[in-house]
Image 1 (cartoon, rainbow, N blue to C red):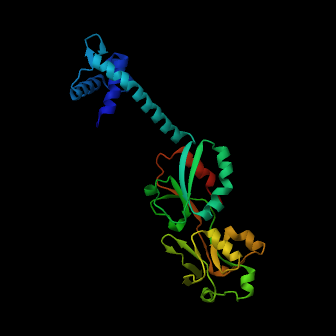
Image 2 (tube, rainbow, N blue to C red; image 1 turned 45 degrees about the vertical axis):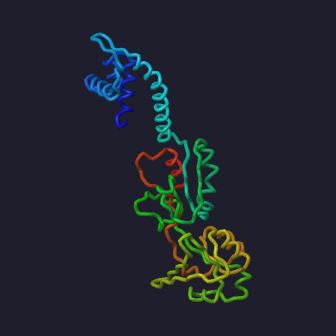
Image 3 (cartoon, one colour; image 1 turned 90 degrees about the vertical axis):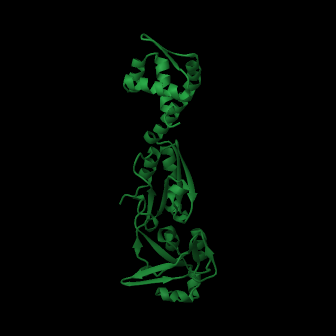
Length: 294
């Protein structure tokens, strides 16, 4: 089957044109190369497909039967190739995207309605996961993740400004306990844990030349950042999340932020994908919509 498709398409061109000269021009090959292709195909099949004279070419009975079956199949292939080409040229089709829940809330949801109005023929198939994933193995077209988790062989496009981790608790919780002044003080507090599939997230702090890592000890561990925030508001303990996602709650007094001077900014979220080559127009449209501009 290594050459059959091309050879069958060549046979169809000769049979339809009833001329090696016209078929060769249509296919963009030499007449001698086309004649060689037909002889090789007939030899492999053990059938004469074309009757040739010095003046004309026409399909044999076997060739006419083959052409009748072949023509709709080749037309379907041509339509499929045209559709595939449209995906590169026109913003349409399906994009499979994997994104952490916090990034979905901060980056994607505020732009989804506008994106759909602008590109109604694009379907976004969105999977939520906090874990870094292999896009190719998972058959995703793109992902959104913190820059530090993205593999070096990926193309990455910034979709947020620099971000900061926030350590938060409710005012009620802190009325009964001393505010932590350094990460070492967290040993005296109920810390709400956040878990990736690979294990518990360890809280990382940095101030000047000092770096400290704390393993949270407390009553709950979640794999959903919204649950961490909810339990912090309920006064169960101290949690961590992205500062931007709780900024309104800090501003209106529902949450108190601590240890901010120990939480430096870091590169935020990036949209990433495997290659720049032959980028589908739908993915290019999503990148344009989500790209962060300072």
